[in-house]
Image (cartoon, rainbow, N blue to C red):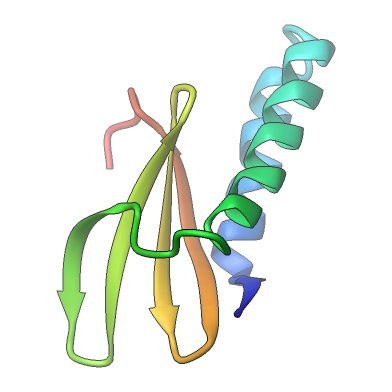
Length: 91
């Protein structure tokens, strides 16, 4: 298995960083590091996340990393990171 990031998920990482950086650069860097590294743990247990959506072509799951929700899909031999949200976001 391997981890892949969608464009939207990469945009979400930038959005998190851009929101936090002006207020607390260290918190922004720490959040980005934690969110970037967390999916690597899914390589050991890809089904650990809670299922949130079932789309005909894939199952979307979520894991919580601090105050962030990372949504991912298992597609063949790939763990595809699809979105990242702060748990307080209205989505």
